[in-house]
Image 1 (tube, rainbow, N blue to C red):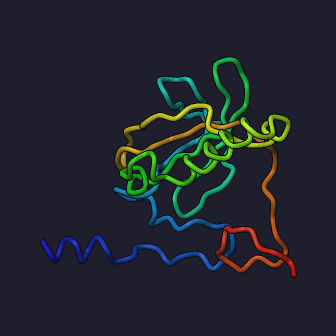
Image 2 (spheres, one colour):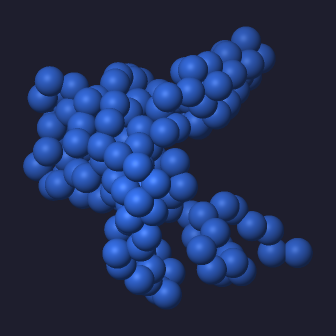
Length: 156
């Protein structure tokens, strides 16, 4: 058993030294889910149009629904999806902000992105939580970003 685990933990590919290139080794049981253009999710409700990005917990895809409205589908890692839904910050923080603004500043509310749908998807590398939100436009990039970091930075 230790030999099998040792073989599984060895890298098969050399990670890219280029920024914005994901590590292929993350597509494994418990890790990221392989998605292709044209794939459908939630019993055909969402069709994948284009890859928008990836991060430490998920990959993000541009989709269209059955009414041809575009959305942003986040396909979480299986390991991350095993957490209780109320402990996944990508899900809870926007909802809490939405609730606060609905009560205090309804005009600002339209600028907050919230999940419009979420569901579990059983895939090749395990079950994972997926959530859909409105497509808000292109990513914000920071000129002073540290290589490999996907977080916002400040230019002080």
